[in-house]
Amino acid sequence: MTAQTLISTEALRALQAAGQPLVLLDCGFDLADPSAGERAYIEGHLPGAQYANLDRDLAGAKTGRNGRHPLPVRADLAATAGRWGIAPGVQVVTYDGQGSPYAARAWWLLRWLGHAEVAVLDGGRAAWLAAGGSLEAGKADVRQRPPYPAQAAAMPTVDAATLQARLGEVALFDARAGERYRGEVEPLDPVAGHIPCATLRFFKDNLQPDGRYKPAEQLRAEWQALIAGRSEVVQQCGSGVTACHNLLAMAHAGLGDAALYPGSWSEWCSDPARPVARG
Image 1 (cartoon, rainbow, N blue to C red):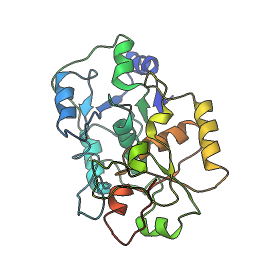
Image 2 (cartoon, helix red, strand yellow):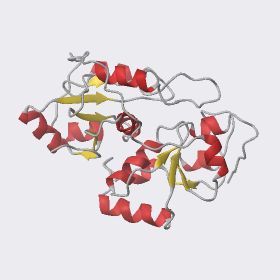
Image 3 (cartoon, one colour):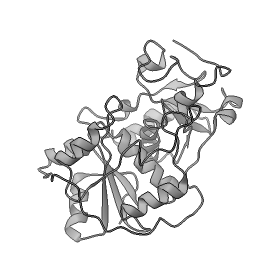
Image 4 (cartoon, rainbow, N blue to C red):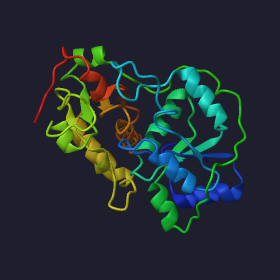
């Protein structure tokens, strides 16, 4: 039995006890302090976990016009996955300590690469500790493998030109906090506001107060109300990271795989010819 959306701490412990091949990825990150996640990892992480750096491992090269966290080149991601010890059939569990947005980004990227056996630890690091789990310091040893076998992209994406041509037709959701969506503040990108026709769905609205995802039935009801019967759904955020949290919520709710706009607001607002909405 494999996990493909969320996995509980109890289920993770069961996999470990059974000796099943397992790769754990600590994806903790802080956009305001990009080295903080790796420092925290060295200080203490789930036993055996490796560190997945958002900028280095979970994003590609920036051009100034493709957003703050563009998708990595698929061959580079395949090589990274192999270095982590990931091969077809190996269960991967990702986690972070920030409400799971970075863990969800790793989940989405591995799904995009074609790896189905990947799940986010529900509740992340806090849930592990609350369940009595231990941490270990330093860097984990890993059995490296060859690059992940090449295959076609397994998760849908949409580019800026296609999205702009279809504004108002697709159900477009913005995962950023409300004040950024409305354009009241913008701490990361040069222009404040949002893509016209986008609906606000802050990624943390997928969570319960303890940091775990809401039950699948509740997520399904909430998302169906937002989608309102439209057949095409696109998720975006500031740079294509927290949007993956919404994509995971939909998948866990049984609503399938919606499309990601990878460049998101950071790419969209880099072209002054694209429309901007505020409020």
